[in-house]
Image (cartoon, rainbow, N blue to C red; front, side, top):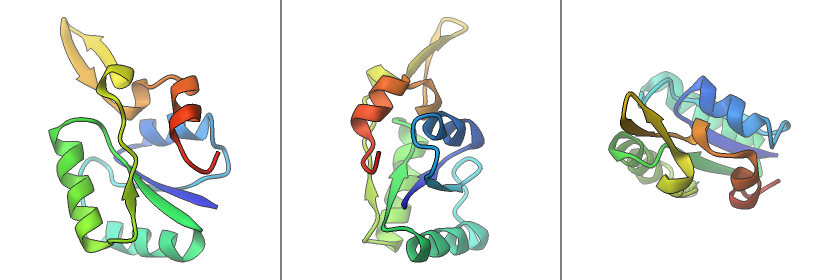
Length: 111
């Protein structure tokens, strides 16, 4: 089984639409406290591989680095910001939840 560490529920739902049997750790934003660490450690036991899949923005980069520093065996899946872009109120917003199913199928390992 493949595990993914994502920032939120909408990210999980987007990835689950192309990888329904994956295991997820949801950070609920960029939280990395005891509860999240315990969930990551459980995922490392349950899954063959665990990946960080955060938004291609500054907060996503920061939490991904913290996780990979704490758990060096976890790799990050880099998302192309152009493939994860959405326009909101004349501003761009970037997130895993905005990626197309086709892009995720091409990008995610374990599918």
